[in-house]
Each structure stands twice: as structure tokens, then as C-alpha cells.
Image (cartoon, rainbow, N blue to C red; front, side, top):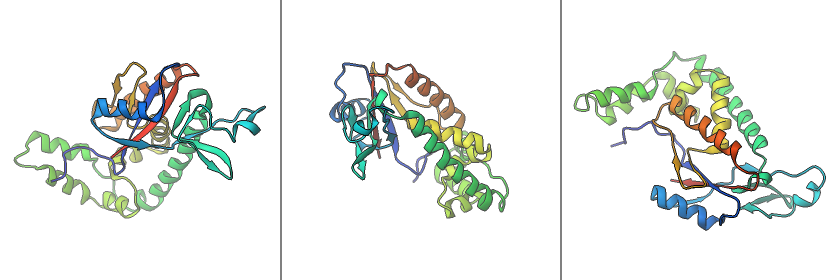
Length: 231
């Protein structure tokens, strides 16, 4: 039976933060994730790499202060993490916002224009929690997924559990995803605290993401980040 939660169709990404001077290799990141979440993960290459204007011709070929970096035509372009000053967080957010805008416009053209508005999964989940004997978790999910708009989203490979963000408009949907690109689904602070959304709603995710992005901005440029994907 499916779990009675609002779950995305993708794996979760955890951002692990390290203070300057802390051991910040992949082993240290995976150990923190395992200790707090009892889960094993793999590096998630999601950050664009920053190349300074004057010495970028040199740094683009050197992987210092980076974790699990990947190259394109010999130059380093993306990494799972590294020193904050070496990661192009602005470029990472801009790319995610662009991709999200394309998805939202496709949704608007092929889904919103052809189907009536749908109720989000949270509404059906509330019915289940109010009377589990009457509305099982399986029935709540079935009722949600039988809506024409949700079926159309599944047909177009769009995540129906993001329905509230899609229906809130392009700016809201893109704003959600550039924040997700920087933070993921949870964040582990330099002092070992785990930050997560308080609940499964989009509003809860926004509150978490706003706090997590503010935390990232406050970190010293020498701090290090590592993105970890867990199933």
C-alpha cells in the first residue's frame, strides 16, 4: 500500500554544510547523512562551478576545493560540492529557474489549457487522516490521481505532487525550483542540525527553503557544501 505522504516522484537531495577547516570530503558528508537520516547516498552533481574572470582560464581545468567534479571538453563545469567560493550558486539557480519556466509553460499549454483545476494531494490526504477507516491511504491516492489534470500531468511526465505550485503561477513554480537547486530537500548545518520542511505542503517547503537559502548566504566563502542523493 502506498505511504500516506505527499511524495515527489524523484529521489531526495540532502545538502551537507561544513565550516572552514572541517573535514569536508565525500566520506564525511555521507557519514553525516547516515547518522541523521539512517540512509546511504551518492554524490549529486548539481552545482555549476565558478571560474574567476582573470584566472578562470586556469581554474577551469583544476579541481581544487571541489567534490566529485565533472568535465566537459576538459574543463570542469559541474560538481557535487566544494568550497562555496568555487561554486556558482547564482548560475545554478538561474539554470534551474530557466528549466522550471520551460516546464511550467509546457504544463500551461498542454495541461492547464485542456483540463479543469484539480485538488492537490494534501486535500485527499486530509480526508485519510480525518477518517482512515473510511478513506485509506490507497484510496486517497487513487482519488487524487483519477482527476483529469493529474492524469494529464502523469502523461506528460510532470510531477503531479507539485500541482499546487504549478497552479500558483509561473513565478511561484520557478521560485520553488531555483531554491530547490541550491538546497535540495533537506540541509545539514555546519553544527550538525538537520533542517527539513515542517510538513508536505508547498507552503512548508517554501518556508524551509527560504530559511535554508538564508543560511547558505550567511556561510563563510571558505565553507564547503556537498549535495547527496538518497533513495
